[in-house]
Image (cartoon, rainbow, N blue to C red; front, side, top):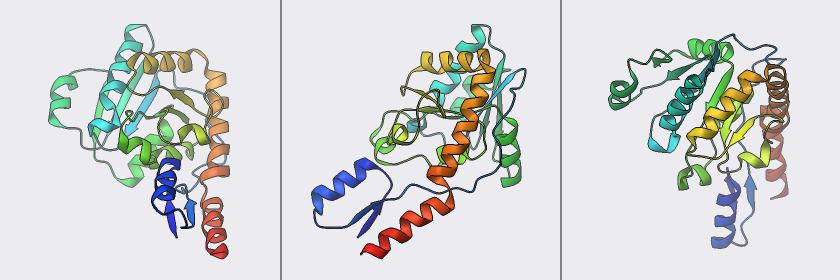
Length: 220
């Protein structure tokens, strides 16, 4: 038997091991809040936390935020984690970016809760489409607005403008447009955040994922 984290991996396993019982097991996450975001900051705060490999698409995010600002949107970008020196050299003087570097778990939680939009912008890579971004469920669990590219099984769990804002990968203009749309439609954005928290409870909570795990073991 095997546990996999994406539909594409499950299909690969079925091809190679047609008789093997396979369970698609999403990642689980603690739910942080009882209610989602109710209002947006006057200056929209966008947060990315993670690594900076090319597959994460952070450069597209930075350029998308810049385009949104150039179009009159009031926003800023927080970048958490060890950003490469090349990125700091290129964007270090930009006033709309705050390179936070490594932070404690407590500060990470606080910054996530204070931010309006949490961004997961992976590129259309093999890695992205065979894996599944753990940060996506963690972001949803905060009750804040989630901006995500359509990679892997994202659309299996989320619907654009219902419980998250979904965009095509590697598309700077799509990121810009989504940021401007969120800032221009705060009531809708907060409703989307509320629905995202509901989806986190229904699809990624420890109890739900634990039941999938236990039920699979029981039928072996």
